[in-house]
Image (tube, rainbow, N blue to C red; front, side):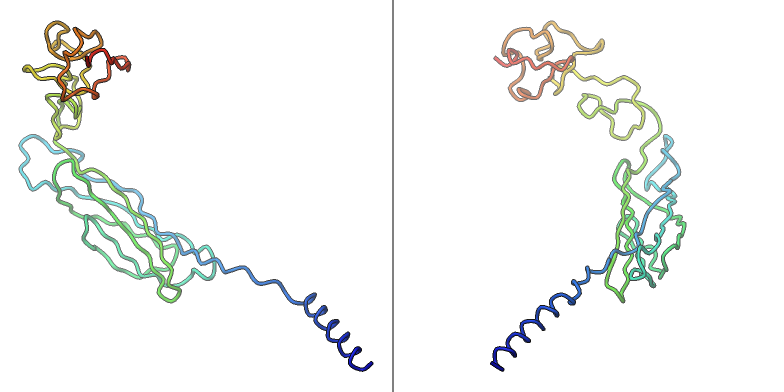
Length: 222
């Protein structure tokens, strides 16, 4: 009898414990303060004819460490700022800090320049990152900026409508649009929207041609 009572008491105690046991706490928010690169500008916007290399710009930008989203993310962050692969600053900031930078950068015309920033809170081992990429300026002036054209000039910033995008000097140009006074439908040996005869298009460009109006002409390829 005593054993039965004891067993009943034990079951009741377990039931009470199950009722009063608190649910597990959700994991804490461990998001860091976000580091942001903004207000990116540079001068000159392009280089005048006659400018000799090395080409250099003055790059300006701001790096800002945003507010801490929680008390957990508060603290002194180690900051690293890189431009074109070179670390230019390594300060320690608290959330809400912003600093403006001005840096001289040398690069080839039209090539990519990358700005990176990292914020690391060592005591909590959390971090955030940001980056901004842009193309280094080109020469001032105008010319053909279409990479599929025969007279494409990668160093030019403004297109002046001079691109030759069809037959030129006896060659078939990919993505022939047969536009402009440099092109002819008769005897140019290239596929165009008014296919001359099946098989006219050079085999090396078969499959690469789309007509001026966006229509594909399989009959051009024989």
